[in-house]
Image (cartoon, rainbow, N blue to C red; front, side, top):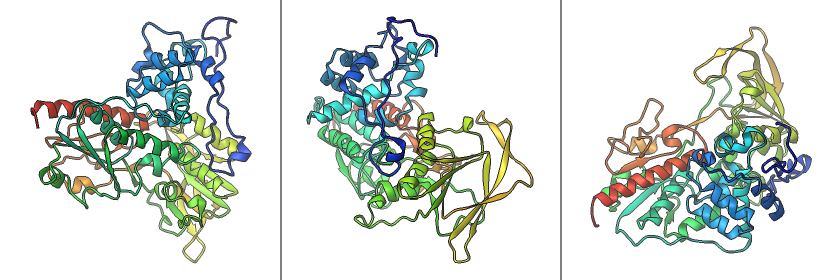
Length: 474
C-alpha cells in the first residue's frame, strides 16, 4: 500500500474486522468475524470519497446504491442505511458476510488505487445487523396485485432474489424448496461460523413479509413437474434456481470406501442437519483424528474448518496447484491457516487405501509441478514421476466442485441443457428454451458465488415481469 498522507480523506487505515482468536474459534461453531462497532462503522464509512462517478456500483451484480448506504452510515443514520440496502438487496446480512467484495465492488473502489479500498462488505453487514439488533424489519411497499402467479424452484440466493423482486412488483410468488428448510446453499453449504443460520432465517422471513409463500419438502420433478405447475396449477411463469448440488469425484481407486465424503454431504450433515450438535441432533458424522480435504476452493476451506471444529486434530488441504492458484478467497485461506490447516500444495491424490475392513486408512498422493497455463489461465499441474507417498488419514473429503442435479431438466420436456447438464438460458434475461420458463444461478453457470446468483435472479425478475405484463391483465 502507498504511504499515507496524514489528514487526507481516504488515507485513514481501513478498520480491521474484530474476530475470535484462532485457537478458540477452531473449537466452536460461533461466527468468526464479530462485526464492526458503531464507531468503527462510522469511521470506515467516512473514508468514502463520495466519487461523482461511483465505479464501485458497476462492480455490484445487484446494483446496490453503495454511496447512498455508506453516506447514511457516515452520518449515523443506520436505519436509513438498512432501508437503502433493501431497495436493491433482499439479503444484505448474507452478502455482507459471504460475497467476495474484493473481486467486485471493492475492486473498483477509487481508494484502492492509492490506499486500501473502502470495506463495503463489512459496512453492508453492519447496517443489516444493526437493524436486526433493533428488533425491527423495514419492509418496502409492494405494487398492487397483478393477478399473475410465478413459481420459483429452489430457495437459494437466485431464487430468493427473483422471488423478492417479483413480489415487490405485485406478482403472487411461491417458492418450492426440496429440503426441509429454505435457503439452499446458504443453509446446507456455508458453515455456521461463516454464516449463522439465524441470519438466513431472518432474510427468508423478510421475503415472506413481502408476500412470498415458501413450500418446503417439495421436490419439483417428483412432487410436481414444471409442466404440471404451469398447465394444472396455473403458474404463468417459472424460475428455476436449483443450484449446483451434485458433487464431482476424482474417479480414483478407493473413493467408495467408508470414511470418504463429498464436501456436499459432509457440509450438509453439519450445516443443515446439525451433526456438530450430535447426539442432540440425530445426525452422525465420522471425523477421526486426521482428515484430508481435496481441493482449493471456498468449499474446501469450509470443509477443512468444519473438520477442525468437529474434533479432528490434523486437517490437511491437498491441492494440486500452489497456494497462489487457489480459487478460495484469501481471507478464508488465511483463516484456515490461522486455525491450523496443514496445506499440502502441489500434491494430487491418486488412490485412497483401505484398512482391510472397508474403511479409509491412507491417501496416496503424487507431487506436482506447474507447467504452462491451461484454459483457466492458471499454470497446469504436471505429475512428478516416482514422487508418490502416503498420508495416514481417517476421513477424506472430496471438494473439487459440484454440478447440476438432473432431476428438473430430465422431467421437463423441451428444456435444453449443455453437455455438462446446465440449463441453457439467456445471460441477460434468464429465458430458457421454453416460453415462460426462466433459469439463473449455478444451475446455468455452474458453481459460482452467492452474489452472481443473486445478480442472475435480478435480471430474470425484470424479464419475467416484462413477459407477464405483455400478456395483459390476468
